[in-house]
Image 1: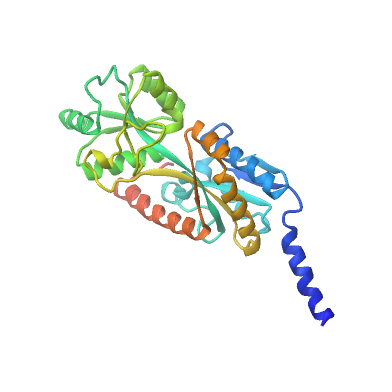
Image 2: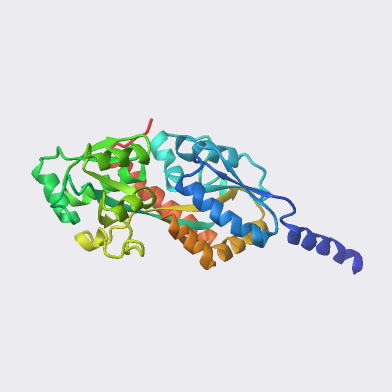
Length: 316
């Protein structure tokens, strides 16, 4: 009986041993961006529970597909993870086939944060626009010549604006930039009058008064902008556009390892200090189980894929 029990005891000891060395989270975007900042906050807290260092490896490029491709080829042992963001999830629609399958080559660990998107206008260029319906009226009056900007073709701000145009039956001309920073700079300068941006990029300018927030894309108002109505509240019931992040492991990672990572992720996101730090940079802790994350991935992949096809959006 003892001989039969030894393999079981050894297996249990091995499973409990994880992790025995540092864990690396690949951030498939440059340092300093929302995904990078949020991952560092979360990873630092997870390291305490895992009792191992959590290292951040920035591998930016092509909407996160370069870093994701590296993670897809990593050993499925839980020591190499990747932080999924909405642009990476949708890359197959925007760039064409990738070297990996986002659903087949990865195992979800859990969602991590929501990154709200907010519609802002230059108050000097559009002094009369204080709400979404006023903006739509302005766009219709300009006969489709009204311009809006985003962080780039295929960005989440671009997809959200085109989705809103579809359901609102109005037109605007897209002026894409290469990143949020130059787009916001020209928005403040008056070269373009309006933008649908992630909250991180524009929150300081909203607070200073150089930009005016007129709508948020999420289904509920934001604690950081409690007086700004949602798109849904302004004539579009059910409208919900939120970019988000989630942790992935390579496919084949043992279930007990994924469960341990999920448990530590949940603990980290429940921590009040972590929540406060995330809100301080314009993101919000948003934990979901691997099963819930899988469902969210598929729902968003289909929904925003339809938007890209209906509006012929590509990022070549």
